Length: 153
Image (cartoon, rainbow, N blue to C red; front, side, top):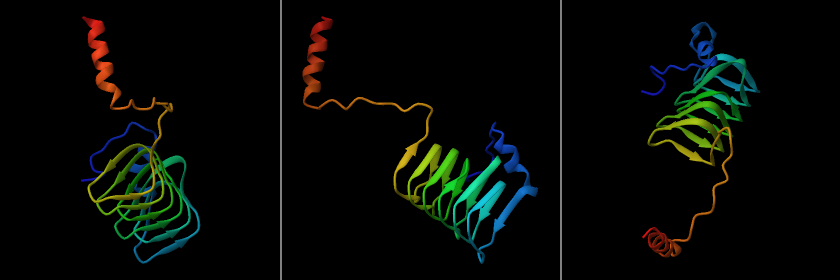
């Protein structure tokens, strides 16, 4: 099951495990405006605004009935609802079976279950950007392989 029995060595993990510091937005609730939190935030209702995390870190869970219309900037994110906006997960991102994201997704590590949908770019955040060379033309490969074999004999 997603999100169970996972341990992290990061400093944000201790804040997300402190259950006294969790906030629930119930299915019947609608929040309009930006939210900044630490610890855990569980969204079952609707949020119209950006969601970000404070300096102590935190974890965001968007349940099946949860809807977020805005940008998300949280290190640890679990989505099983609907998001309209970019998602920035600097540690890990879990997209559950009913996840639907309309926007670009920026992640360091991602887990995506069959059924999850992303309508946007998936962009991996890594320490260095790699400029990979353009792929070789497939017609040139057999000739280059023959030349390399001839050079080795």
